[in-house]
Image 1 (cartoon, rainbow, N blue to C red):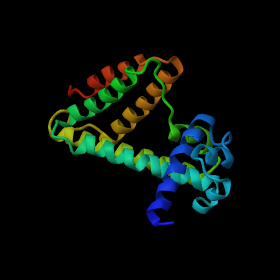
Image 2 (cartoon, rainbow, N blue to C red; image 1 turned 135 degrees about the vertical axis):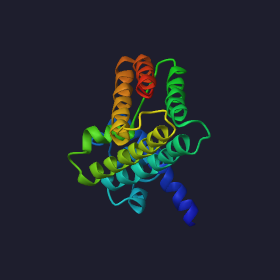
Image 3 (cartoon, helix red, strand yellow; image 1 turned 60 degrees about the vertical axis):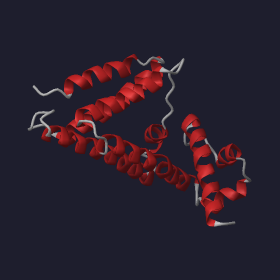
Length: 198
C-alpha cells in the first residue's frame, strides 16, 4: 500500500471513528464500533493506532488542526478590520446553526473534555493545547483591534480572548440543550458591546 493510500485510510478511520466517539462518548465507543463505521476489518485498526487512547489523540489533531488554520485565516488574514473579523466569524457560525431546522452541535473536543480530561493525562494535555492555540489566535486579533483603536488600549487581550472562548462554548451548550439559536444570538449581541471602546 502506498503512503498516500495508507494516509487516506487512516484519515477515513479518524473521521468516521471521531463521529461515533462524539455521539457515544469515549467509554461508550469500542474499537469494533470505530472499524465498523469506517468499514474496515478490526485488525486493521492496530496498523494505524496503538490503542483507543492513541486513536483519540490522533483524531483530535486530525480534526482540530485544520479548524485552527481556518480560524487563524478568518481572524488574522482578512482585509476586514479586526473587530469586523471577530464579529463576522461568529455571525457566520450562528447563521450556519440558524439554517438548521433543529440546531444540532456535536463537539468531539467537548465530549472528550468532559469524559477524559481527568482520566487521561495525554488527552487532557492535547485538549488544553488546542484550546490555548485558539485563545492565542483570538488574542492576537484583539491586540490588532487595540492597535486600530477599536478597543481600549489597556485591554487585557489574553484574558478577554479566554472569556469570549468560554462564553461561546457555554452558548453552544445552551443551544444544544434548548435546541434553539437564541443563546448564540445573545452571545453575539453581548460580544458586539464588549468589543466597543468605552
